[in-house]
Image 1 (tube, rainbow, N blue to C red):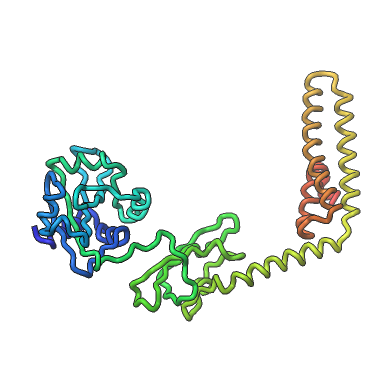
Image 2 (cartoon, rainbow, N blue to C red; image 1 turned 180 degrees about the vertical axis):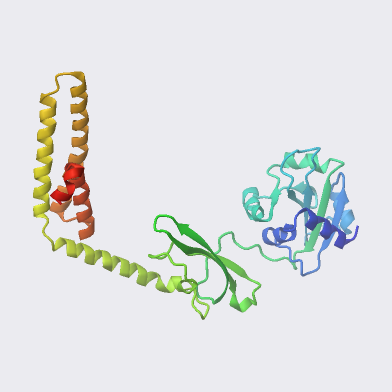
Length: 328
């Protein structure tokens, strides 16, 4: 079978197979390589014979893609990768890492040698063989290389997310091309979570000159957020909430008297149940009241709004709904 026929057959089964070999193993298909097909059982010697190279050559990397046969396994029909050494057919040294790299290309790997052997010995197996001299192969990039903020990038595309709480959409993922590689090197960047305010404007993440603004704004965003928090707490510390504490104290004591009266009047099971429910409600609101008084004394609320919101929340629990507007 001709080399072109092998590649066509592989791409018919999986259009991303060559990309997977490039990303996970380092094949450079723009440089010389060999591709052949074997039907049925195969051994190390039959693979090398088909390729026309010597098994003892240490400078050639040989990889096979095995088309899983229904007669052997009724599930997981992805092309599976294995490696040919001078002595045996092997699985990957780091199976989990290779499997992670291949997952994006709809490829898989054998997780144990015993899982590979039934396919190697089966007459219905189809095996695609790829070989390349190691001097032509590319280094396999790290799984999570650090992002280089000093380089310039070209914007390609982006993806948005929707925040149902604030009812806004924002950019959370950007596809970029490295400018000085003529578009050959691409990368992605997750940015949406970073900003104090989520944005759906692309220029909030990459400027017109191609630089990522995230790194340049990081310190300013942090300092501004910290400064706003400090100013909000200083403004709160300058206020006097004694009257609000006194008002809540009057309301909590009134609620306590109602609970005690309910307990004194509990002379049948239904009234005992009502008194117990009133006591549970009182205990819950008293815990909130106690924390509010303590934080007010310590001046530990982060802002005036936070203190007011807590005050109103406790007051709503203490004042009946129909009298709440009058009490406020």
